[in-house]
Image 1 (cartoon, rainbow, N blue to C red):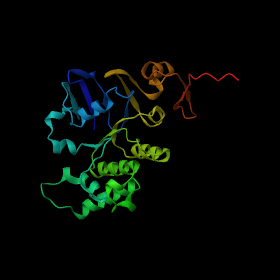
Image 2: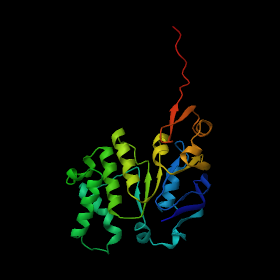
Image 3: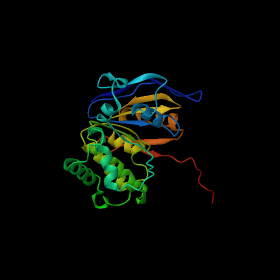
Image 4: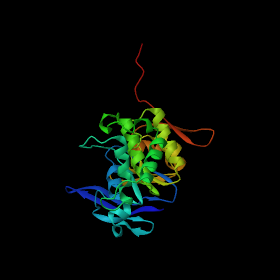
Length: 259
């Protein structure tokens, strides 16, 4: 499974949101999209999972323009975990996860025992099996995020697209989420806010700034103090742990109060 954007441009309301973006994810890679708020990360992902149509350029999936796929065909290749999960009906957790099976079913086809087995397995994977009968809207934001990941897993696609998947999660669940993504043996493309999580778990990074590609490379190559200051406007110190993985310490500009 390979995924890439070629010369992707998006203009909304007369304003250029993305300009000539090329990102690529190779088979079984975890690729992070980083950048400050408003840099275009969510817009880029929405073009990839076909919520937005680019003004120019294309998304290519396995060497083929995605416009050549039907919605059902692309839903069998890409599963999405977005930031916002609003439902106007009181679905249970199990019912929400069952929605992930719809790309594999014909119209009005009923759920099978195999569908329920897959859903149960997905819920167990994210640690939400004990809340399968709870109403989705009564869950915390972090619990909802884990259920939506279970729905994506139930879709059984070779590629996952995630928009800030660790939002609303406590540190423990942030790490569990990223460890889970690493264990899935899938192609993963995600927007990630935390540079330290990106450094530990991503194989490759693409950075956006003001809708343009500001840099790309492995975490070791890209996450330098000079780059962080240029893109994020903050000073940082970058160290390396015993495994050669970079970590970032942000430096305060606050002056010590005089005694």
